[in-house]
Image (tube, rainbow over all chains, first blue to last red; front, top):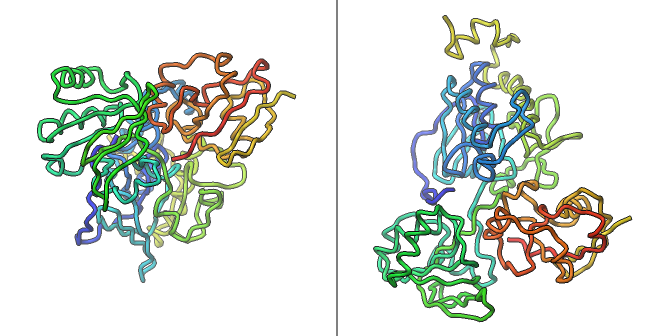
Length: 354
Length: 104
């Protein structure tokens, strides 16, 4: 899970030019790198997670997958690692911890994509392999929470220094909550942890350390769910806790760090002017191209009659998409269809030539 | 035909045909009621969170460790909270009533 927020300030670096920009580094995006690589195309990938793998790595790294052709059983993490290894000869470049924010067409017909971190990518082809959207921190669903967000209510730690001398309340029972509680406790004025039950899914070692802090009185521990925030002008003064035991409790704090996991949302690409149908992008089934020439959509985010949201569908879509993408990237080159078993040209690209 | 009752976030009750062997999440989703179920039913998110009517709670399969861990990512968790993907429908659950938990 991403524990740091992406840098918000846009940079003015020179644009990165490449053949294909892939939005989403899940299994479909990773396999698109491979298929594009076979055709001699280079790829850059953008993903809001801090690592490649998408849902496979974020939601079910340890859960078995049984329906990948010729792989009777693998976990989400194993699938990701295998796809990364398969893509390695083609040197994909990853822009992680950042969301694809804006997309504009340039005079030469290429596309310019700018990320939330200010990375500027230019390419003739954009491939949206964004699954169910990008992973973003789940926000505190209280009606009065918005004014506090970014001021005294945070969902990630950008700079630890920001928490020095604060009366910090951390909410959550997973690794992010406990890791940050343990890291910030030495520099905060006071720390408290709130979780809905006396059981923590964080690593046992962190749970032990947290309990030791509680035992020596360095941190307080509360069981319940935050029901109300108190404060003015975005400055938190305390929260009301609905205790798991039934009562209510007020906890004084000036800073709240809430970790309720990540959720997926379509984000800025919803406003890129693509044809959407129930939050999915409609494509043709010949090349998986969207209503905009040069913009493709593959994997779970793409829809067409008969679509099945399976990883193997994304693989198939990636292969077909690359055929048309090649025309945009190498308009003067004729594409010859070749097999990896026999083509010396492909062997060279794969780095397996004798 | 077996059915379950689903109370949506506006408090409206829907009677939905229930198929033996489907999870309650799948029954709700296939009836086009608003349930996100982002992970598709592998107990890897908490977006199929429902509240189960009190008299039905003891009739449900016990909650696994995985499910109670995932409920940590839900909000407004109550004693009758369950992840609906973890409740397989069977004939004894004919008439089960669940309320869709708030989305966030």
